[in-house]
Length: 315
Ligand code: SF4
Ligand code: SF4
Image 1 (cartoon, rainbow, N blue to C red):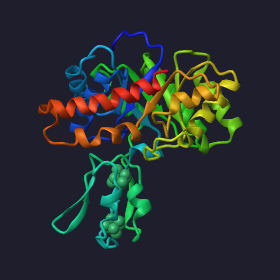
Image 2 (spheres, rainbow, N blue to C red):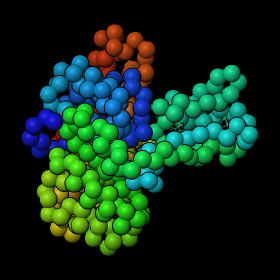
Image 3 (cartoon, protein in one colour):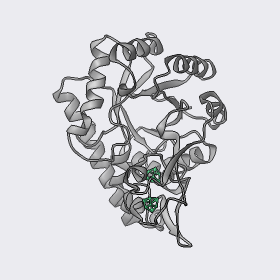
């Protein structure tokens, strides 16, 4: 675990279900080089190794914290899309819309690379034949955490996007019992009434100012760069702050280059920004090239874009 003082968190989210090792290594390399100080990856040993490899290759190897994401049973971030072949008409719409390039055609069959799928369900929403189902490969949050504890991680993020309060509190208690380091949780306001969600967050924060609360405004929204997609995340942060809950507040879900500016305009005092879809899409052309790690021009181009994003959110 790195012993780094952090004032503001600038986090690149790789996707809690993303097991595309090459992509994760490249994202870690690019965003660590650009100044981001945290990377969020799936709680899998090989994924953690890939992220560490990318961080080591960057020009800021000692500044980036490695956070693993684990979740409750219903957490969409841990879902995988599966094709029902009997219904599939091979229209290829899913190939067009997948942000992860996880869908492809082989042997005249549409296939999904499970390791690259992040469960965003864009394919399902765009399938005209209702041929895509969701599969959840559930392991309890503690089981997931215990499997990576020896990997020298710097932070844990618990995805508790669920309406089952008892389950959330039980899981949270268990996690805090086995992990004493930096820990946070990611919550979606749409799952519960405001009063309930505030009570739940108060119990979880429990006056511990080190707990990080990630306000998941518009989960996996696709990465547009506008003010509007930040509204839910900023409004959720405002709700927490106006209820005098003292925790580190990091915005996520719909976040982009305008997030910090928008929060500032709204007088919402945040402790950081976590960016997923927008940041991944920004450098997708460069990092998906097979020779990315041998091609300095591609690397510089990706780092420049990532640094520009960092400069815009670091205000
Ligand atoms: S969008 Fe649906 S019907 Fe079309 S190829 Fe994909 S799974 Fe098959
Ligand atoms: S669109 Fe989303 S859910 Fe569907 S295969 Fe791609 S990453 Fe997975």
